[in-house]
Image (cartoon, rainbow, N blue to C red; front, side, top):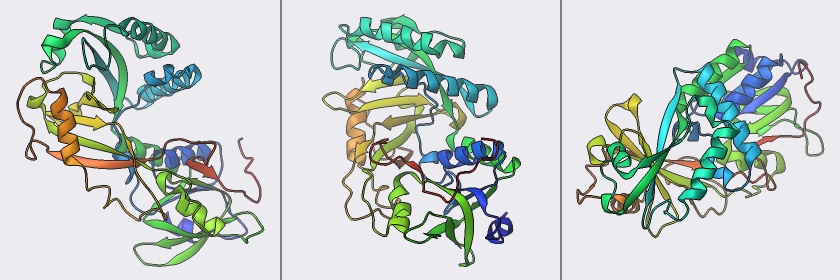
Length: 372
């Protein structure tokens, strides 16, 4: 595929050039290739090397967005979730969630449990029922049976609803392979170092460097899509000449600990007392007897352009992570550095379309029309 990318003549440009080999970029490449367009995708590292391999491993329907009144978004998310469950059952599966109702310091108090019940019904009717199951109300004993380390003295009841989990990296690779099956040229270890076109005209392609050989070559294209996530400003700077500094990255921390420390058989959402974050405890059946805890993303200060790698992100606040876990544990069993088996971080950009979308389409010479 590298030869097809490197030898593309200027008088026969690709219809679409996608920058970024995460799930967004691979999805754009598949969509365009399936419509009959000639497509190229370049990724400077490995496919799914960034956030697409360090996500929360969920294909969720967006229950929390119902609180914001965005019913249409939830409807679309649930529709796409069902499509993935149907098309990729080897990578996407049903995942039940437990929401404990605690008498104090819980994500759901007895006072708002009735509102949650209504929200779950709305979630099911919006499209959640497509998964084949509806939410259930549990007694305290039933909730404890699913997660014995919940604080029994403060547990009132619970709710179970159903979402989906995914092997995120393999899903990204599957989408990329499907795009290639439809004719897309998908190449990794190739970095965009410049864009083609003058200051006054549209972008007509990109200058790409092969990381393995150091060779630099032009890739002509009618349309260039930047699907680079937190690195979107770097690509914009190539076109605009200066870093727009328009994105505010957020960091999320994921840790895995031995299952014996929590002993849950379904995913559990637990709030951290006196904290704005929540702890998600999910059973990773694909990875053996491990439990993974995800913390909501923290916004991070970012000035003067973005860094080239994740090194600074991987210096995790382990003390903060352990403190959050300890706050929600019912027993006194200490989680020390030996208890945390794996930990990693990811970066994401809160979607602020009014500032600049994460997947941006440059001004181009002409819009592709094939199969539109």
